[in-house]
Image: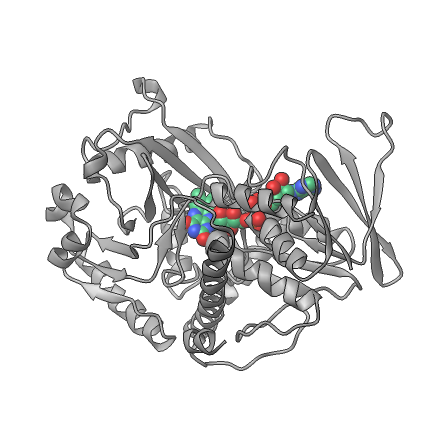
Length: 449
Ligand SMILES: Cc1cc2nc3c(=O)[nH]c(=O)nc-3n(C[C@H](O)[C@H](O)[C@H](O)COP(=O)(O)OP(=O)(O)OC[C@H]3O[C@@H](n4cnc5c(N)ncnc54)[C@H](O)[C@@H]3O)c2cc1C
């Protein structure tokens, strides 16, 4: 079967790998000159099967309102004259209740467990090295109320088989002694030993290399212009090499038996051109990668700082720090006053938590942090769309929001299985399918699979 994958982020590359494993002829198309150069480039690096609660919960609308004028807020809603943004927000509000929250957690944990197993298989099969650390993920709190509330989340996650546990401040500092200097401010934390971290960009680029060695064809530097429809099916994709004008070079038309759209946030506008309307909206996030001044004092356990809702992961001689979400359109600027404020917040916060451990100086102070921003392909439920559309031959693997690295290996495997007529062994509602079993423990399902 001749299959085209649109997008060479973690989702597209993992899809290509698993399709090739099943004998497909695969072509990957991306506008960038290589793999993982957009949202999969510099994320927080967490394989976060257990820290996966959706944004939409009972308290989210009030928090978003409270934060609307705070430049450093973890979630910043920036209203625009954009119908897609408002539609997305209305759908998000519909998920802000306890029943939807529990339903969404069940799906996210199911995919997370399936994906973690798929990632381990992939690493075993390929030997890819990507600064992987299997030390778990910790989460620390700096105010008593948030720490008390963490107990409810732990209980809920345990219902789904996630072994997250509450830890005292002392225990947290034993798990990760790097936070000792900040210990007085920590009220307590949670910890899950089975989570891990590693560099998504390095992993994706290495996997793309392995795909090429196995015969996957790559068309980098090409914009996908159109999906061409023939009746109720997609029969081809129109692409154009970057840097050539519409009149300058003929667009290439590539025919395929199946097309998988894995274009991250850009999947939604592309799909809309053929009448497939999915609520995927960009959620801008920031990261900073700091060189370590004192490697011996830097954390090895990937950690979430609840105070600022930022995650930090050790990547060799660097510390990656990432977080915050802005719902404000497609802007990727790093030099606006708002973007600068958010990047500088990352520098300040790390200096506060880990004094003297990294070179956190901002460019204005003579430092050289690698600030970066990316658009998370966000859905109102935090559940990605994986599966078939109503158009023959058109498949989607997109909308992975905050968890695309965590869910990448499994999402690629699942769509490759579906396209090949197999049923992925997890309790998940795939696009184009009816409801599946609800309420089962996803981790035990993954263990049986
Ligand atoms: C600040 C931040 C921190 C994060 N931290 C984590 C984390 O710790 N753990 C985690 O699991 N996830 C995390 N994520 C989320 C994760 O990075 C994303 O979910 C994931 O990278 C999405 O992958 P993707 O392949 O769908 O999209 P992308 O990586 O953006 O890939 C899509 C590709 O499609 C291509 N494309 C799009 N449109 C076209 C077109 N018209 N023509 C040609 N090519 C096109 C793009 O060039 C791009 O290469 C974080 C995200 C951010 C922003």
